[in-house]
Image (cartoon, rainbow, N blue to C red):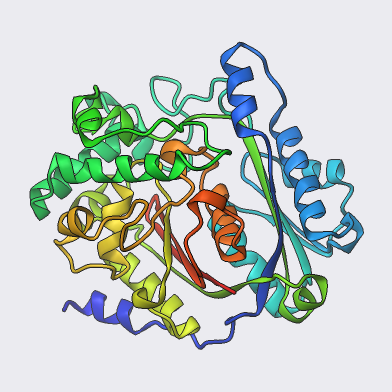
Length: 398
């Protein structure tokens, strides 16, 4: 083990934030209806409108008024001050963050005593306004140079970057095209039972293998959706959460580890596949929660592209390094499989809410509200994310 690896492995937090906060309310917009309206040329809402609709639904789910909210985190697609103005909230603590960092920040703010009830609000009109995730006008290059650094060589989209990741991973691990297809097929199996999912028609492995390549080796079914919508969560201090609802969903532990060195040249994602950071984030959250992979009933993985899933299976300890393909073939992650994964259909088939909708699925599975796709007696759900080298591990429990 290298000196750098030794240092990373030793940085485990003390278990202070175990069950310090709980989710008491969730809400979202009409992803299916808005998908249809957008495809018909309509613009149902803007990003603020979607976020506020989700926020109202989350307040109703929590059975509280906005006056109880004293913390606000805005998703990165909206301005924090304007969102607070439109929501009518003057918080004593606030900020802006992506989905998983928003959860972590809410826990930290609550544990530090800066707030007791934090609203996390996200809205995105990416479909209706034609957000460019690739091509000459691709967004995001200012924050992540890898999105534009390789443009002279034809890499003008995030799909191209993940295609390179998958190609390298296949070579390093002996991973096959058919094994990659197991992810898309499994997630469509889950979404076929989800009334909130945009894509509900089941697919077979033959359908996957016969589908067009978008950027080889990524097939059409390996790509996430692009749709409008909003998501909101209400997270409260643990004891207050118990008074607010008889069904609080606790945040058992959070871990984070980043790989920034060499990010622009893609080194962490095509050489190490984020493995060291995933392992460290996992170790942190497992240490805080006192739980491990064998304790998890469900795994939720940020899946802008399907390749995130096998990387997570190895990085967070659900199988040995090099055995994700075998795990997908033999243990399976779809309905009836050993490890139910992305049980809503995820970004590939339910909705692309940039990790926010995954948090709702964690909560609803633990509440037992998922109907036909409900995982029996689910007690712990693990959410993982490795976007742009920021590796997060969040464990939810009831």
